[in-house]
Amino acid sequence: MSGKQVFIFGAGYSGKAFAGANGGTASIFGTTRSEEKFEALRQAGIVPLLFDGKLTNEIGAALEKTTHLVVSVGPEEAGDPVLNAARQAIAGMPALEWIGYLSTVGVYGDHGGAWVDETAACRPVSKRSVMRVEAERAWLRLGEDIGRPVAILRLSGIYGPGRNALVNLENGTARRLVKPDQVFNRIHCDDISGALWHLISGNRGGIFNVTDDEPAPPQDVVAYAAHLMSVEPPPEIPFDTAQLSPMARSFYGENKRVANAAIKAAGYRFRFPDYRAAFDHMWASGDWRDGAPRSPMRGVKG
Image 1: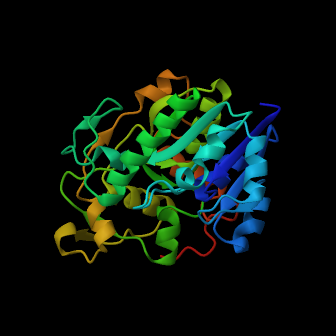
Image 2: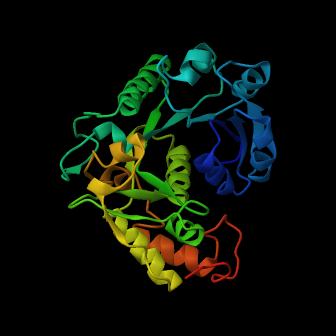
């Protein structure tokens, strides 16, 4: 990996986890919309740059030497903001070897709980997922136009340190919504990082579901976290009577089981193949709050 320079458009939660798994093998640049987040990016091993939809001289200079481009910026009604601002610059990047685009399994829409893989029809329900499909296609077209491999990583529900049911139980926001037969896949941020680095190592293109092995009812995940913490799980709430935001309710309008054979066939092995393995690790290591190991029971409320 020596000599690699990675540029991340949208260096948020997943981008920082990716940089944390670098091990000093590549230089990493990443963008944020706010200078207030610069220090957090530096601490994650990322050289911070500001991107608010416009290509700056600093970004242009970094792209000139970038070998691997990771895009983690969501599409907007006007299209993909990175392509809108930087398509010409990206097309002309002299050192570029590979592009990775972080998408979502939401592009599949609702399949009534059936299994889907990368060959399944994309029938997005929400407007945001419709825009995702369009953005995926735009990045794949760019790759074809410039002769570079593009990897589309369709991610399921992201969790990890600081973003999980253990944290929600501790701060009192955990809920167990129950909708009969509803399941979701999920993915630990370390496996997003691992999949990205694996694809980068071989400059592999294609469409990959980056998701765990076990689609499961969301209330079961909360119950398992409560078991680890030795606390009572919150009561079950029927979905029909739950107070939810329109976006939260829309997630429950899509039910599918997402298969991950393609990324495994590409040689990747998941660190956390199911939520239990991940929660066991986070609880035992104490990194479930924000990545810094602590005494597991500190601050836990019954």
